[in-house]
Length: 230
Length: 322
Image (cartoon, rainbow over all chains, first blue to last red; front, side, top):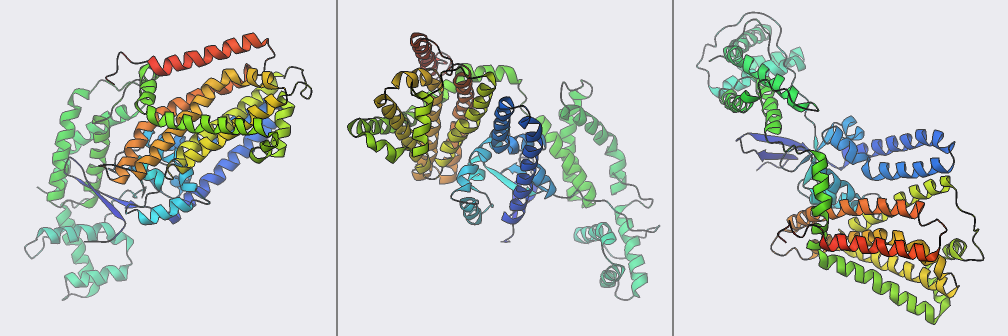
């Protein structure tokens, strides 16, 4: 068994979704950003409202109410489970089965925020989050939601160069996956590291030649000499 | 089949699916073209994703197909009902039915409020000084200023004050209701304390003002908006207690599942609580503050109570299978 903060969900279509759960620190930072933004909105709007006297003060109170209770709900519905703070921290709220957040789910988790706040500074929420296997606070438990790190979309990058050659050994599926992973991740590695890896594949060759050969074989597996992709 | 051949063969289908998805994900009516092929396209996409995984095509292609499948999945299984008929059905049937389904909890929360109010009222009739144990000195002064015939200024409030008070009632009362509900999650203690405290406060204020000879201004003020406002607070308290009980005694469910179920059943009631409190804030800000003959105010107030309780007890009985 692996112990990590990944949540694995098997969908009815037989696909396996892996979500990485967000812990208390990024969530607290996102909350802090949201709090600051709420304060800023309230401050900016209060200036013209104060000039309107009693009407303005009434509207100010209504706005304060809306910001306190419905600011997260509004943005979580608008931006697929992300408030501005969560967006900045690359977090999102989804349901426990990986489905997009519903209005009811968002309402439950945000209405019950008060219970997590108790007695001070989200102490209850923090303790519950540490105990809960999926890093959920009370509101999340009741709404069946989890906060996840939004995965970066995979950038398809091709290793530079032209030409391909067939591998000189029978290629197993695992070999194929390793080669694909190499060609996708190589641009993010230093040249020295790439050569080091290439030497593992072709120990009999000097590093630059080994790297060149590895790239050509990887292009062969990808099966398109010219580049270009989805 | 090599990956590039695979991509070449199926790319037109993926692109068609992407155009259809763009139409479906936008707001408003989806374009009719390609819709008939959507379900079949989705199925063959699932097949291609499985192939891409099995054959070990590049991770970028796999994740592209995976994202496309997720988007299509969301659109295919989405439940999109028009909003207005749903709202109408909710207020015609859903809300009162949801309230009646949990009537025991609402009864307990009401009893907590009423009994604590009656107890404090009785105690203060016995010893008027006891009011200071429940209500702070500033609040006593505020109450007297608001309702006492000799102390309050009799001039009508301006429209601007009405709007200001409306904002205050929204901010304060709905906040209290939501907090009462959420406090219930802490084993029900939060909700119960909120009901006992609000009941005591109400009892103390009523008793103190009636001893001070200001009962008529007080009751003519509170009777109309009291119907939606007090009812909403009782309902919020009932939901909170239900939530707390699901933690304490989950029955045959796991605790987490019991809380989830309770929260799901309480949510429609909380929608209603929200609307009731907005109505109450309107009445309180724009009607209760009017200086009118007591008969009119009592009449309207009684009508508010009558209509609200007829609605809660009777609406949606024929349709539901309660």
